[in-house]
Length: 227
Image 1 (cartoon, helix red, strand yellow):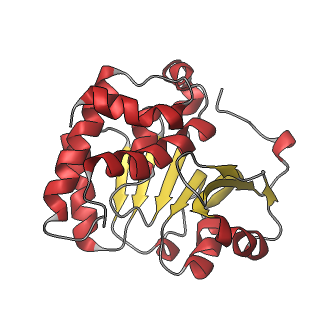
Image 2 (cartoon, rainbow, N blue to C red; image 1 turned 90 degrees about the vertical axis):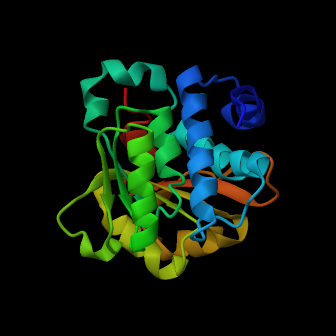
């Protein structure tokens, strides 16, 4: 897919931020691999490349921008190199891999129990030459000795039972990032009733999708960014 077309489609989600030529080329490669694999296994019901950009990459990069608002500073920060992100139920790699493309210095763990989808993620990581990335072909509840600074959750099955598992993977000052429909907000906030929640942020070009960020601790007491 043409890089200039990708850049144009992503403008509403980035609010003035501009992706590099390398980032745009990586997204183009990602789309090519996704479409090729999608003929063999069901990674996404969306087939139109423009919709893949807006629905998957746009939403994922919108979350990335709110989690890591100043990515240009991250490569110079030793703290960010240790910043650990887990994407639970990663599927086709959203939002985890676009977040990695946005903030390359993070350590990313993709948790995907489906063997074929995990194999796709490994091929994708190789094709994009991503480093500091770990694909866990297992169920999230089996990860008991590892905690993360950020856990992301998007379009997973059994949302009500998965949400507490996602919270259990967080460090004490960690953050959870949910990309969900607005109808799921009351459920999320009720299940994790002890969490401190930020106001949900509407995702551009969507009637009902929102980004919801939560934490064990008050937001004023913890890092707003990784700087």
